[in-house]
Length: 462
View 1 (cartoon, rainbow, N blue to C red):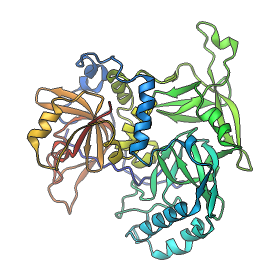
View 2 (cartoon, helix red, strand yellow; view 1 turned 30 degrees about the vertical axis):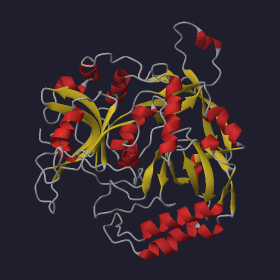
View 3 (cartoon, helix red, strand yellow; view 1 turned 45 degrees about the vertical axis):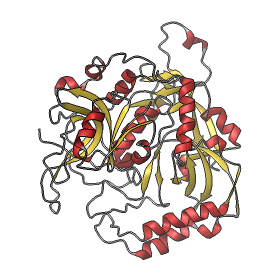
């Protein structure tokens, strides 16, 4: 197998549009790359190599303090339930204007590979954003996502591309938010189909039909901040409308927190096979929130409360995503590099940033480097890392460190494609499109250099 490359950025992404797209077939996976072996495709292989792998790294109380530290460090990470009930409208209006101007001034292409004219922004987007309609004082509304939904830079699902043909990389997409994600609502589009919201790790436009507005912040908090919940610890978990599990409502992805409904006495019996009962939000015709019971199979990979935060459990979570699809910002129901890392740590209740640059700032800093330089310092830093806890950052990419075998250091990460040649104009590549295990020589035979060459920082989530 040849070496592979990826590109992963967090700041601009897209979820699947309604139209069918012609894409190359996905490679079969999990793919075994570079010097990785079949044995290395299993979490236990790496866990057995760690002394004290099951040891608790942080208690629940320490994680709560850690979350406060993250929010103080990363301004995009906020506690929705601490937002003010009122906010100066000028702050939001200025942010909307900045986002609009930034995208309007970029050279972007449509899916037809034609240059997007400025008139598209002026005639179609600006009237929707209605910046002049932001009130001087915003009275906050409080809602929750009724399903996984895209957070967009502008209120449109039109794809805008940085380069011709890059249909998998929509420049309007920030990220996805999950089912039951609490949000504060700042503003709406002129047609009422979009809301400008603040979520715990991102701010932007979401479809109004995907947000249910609660009567008050306390009403939202009763469910979205309940201490009785299930957390999805598998790649995803199916949520059903009926106890017989014949009608699927949706699949909740790793890290989703779903409040538990009161447990029927029949579920308390030893060996019960009845499904777990949970609360699901839904949006009424007037946009207000309703809550109904739903059901999750006991065989689903979910847990009451969060797993113990240990090196072993971090690796177990990461390897549950091995071979699953790469997706720029959640596009095509996949995960990009930082989305993969985000979901792994989110499943422990860590208020982890979604952007790879922000992720690299959290925890203990173990080194900053210039690309293609400081090899000795990098090797020294790599030799001291704790697998699972350590993140390796490159420009536009993030990886979880697995360990060292012989002279090779290994990582698990979500990657898109391999650069295969030395000519940047040709930009020859092979697709990967999945979470893989590789060593740091990956992509070393191309013009952009190996993973090792391009490491710019190392930090541990400790």
